Length: 633
Image 1 (cartoon, one colour):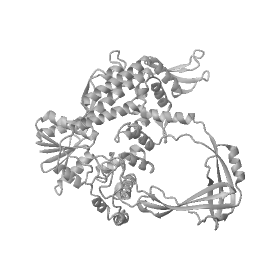
Image 2: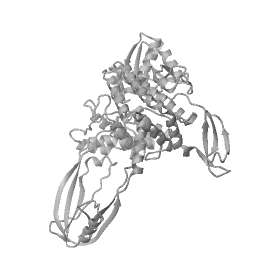
Image 3: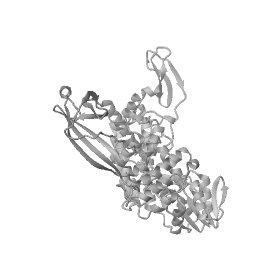
Image 4: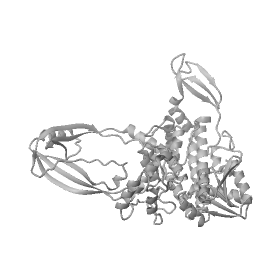
């Protein structure tokens, strides 16, 4: 029996249907888990990770005097099943298998999931032959090719994933436990700290500080309105921003007729077609459609699993030569994009556009199958259409613009106006997400005299930097080496779910600021990107077989011990700082006796509501005791 293990049930079903061809696939549920069989093959899907890494028994008591937060750094780890029914079925089928094919997604996480399945199989059938099918799309051509030419599991790639798993566990669990205990937080109110999460939160907090500390500067902009043949023209003073009011007033007073056209320069501008989508640029584009980063990736993952698009987790912005671009265009013919595809085929650029990043694991995100709005529904169609149109744009010619710059003299004061007109829409014809705004000027010639209809001196102020949108934050995370293409949107989701940030654009909550400030003050290594970026670079070296998993994990332990040297020396102060900054969060209302604030108070593991007017006012309400949470994974 040939056992095929896919990453999820939906991909298992699709892979089975493709490989079976005209043969009927038998879908059977065993213990609540679906299998898909045909001929001598059986395909079963995982649920991503079906085992997890956890600490050895004995570390669950947060208030243990023996197993303090620091001891988690060097604690032993074990792998535990999280989906026992799937694990049991995999091992039952593996005992009867003479060939096993791992068909999980091909990236670091997918390879680690594949290795976990590999170990489950080996535990019950040590001698069975195991190979690996790699693909970038769940389409007939890709799946058949992958199974006709299988390879071996990439243990170095999986080791990089294991290193990240172990590093994130030790950093997250030890620091979360330390900060929560210091701030007397338990149960659902624990304070989460993480290797990628904390420097990302710090960027949001630092931006908020910039906004709060921003001192606006006043400046003035000077413009005039003229016209020719009843067509209005706005011209701006070439000085740009006036930072001195008296100078601006003098320029305004000196702006008088005659207004003479001094020069007219005409030209053309090339408007280059966009590069193919990688994960980050896709998320940015999807955000303009109103989709959060997490939602955009969820919809893209669904489209991939159903064979409509290629794998959406990629750093590549260059189509590989092996990708059949003509075949993809033909796949899209006959449907809603038929006219656009026909136009692209007729006007196709000689070489597709390309971005700055090129990798060999997966191609840029592109369509792989035809779909209809009715079949996909509104949100999935929105993402699918975006990806189709981006693909068409990368094969389309550049757009071209006619440009003109006119300069004027108003009794010695210089002004200028610019105009632009779209000569050839090019890629903009098939990609309507980037608006092309024309600004048409009347035909002007040097020496012409025009009337001045009005002069406007406008007072303005400089603006603080904007808060980060989710998509912009993902770009900044990428620039700083924080997280991976697969995890950045998940990190933002965690910050939101843990109530460290809120809103869109993102702003920190009281708790988010308090945790960041405490770490900044006493262990800035945690909130700065350098440490995380270094570990990410070293995990990349594991993939390239230049470093080992054990080496990088040991290095990480050393870093974390140095962090704890600083934290433990200031534990009481850190706790007080966090509790003081988050006092407002614990205010439950006015005291019915004296009118002061009532706040939730903690003594040891007990908690109560007490009046801030104490000791003059002794009003209080007892509450159930705190429950200290288990280790954060």
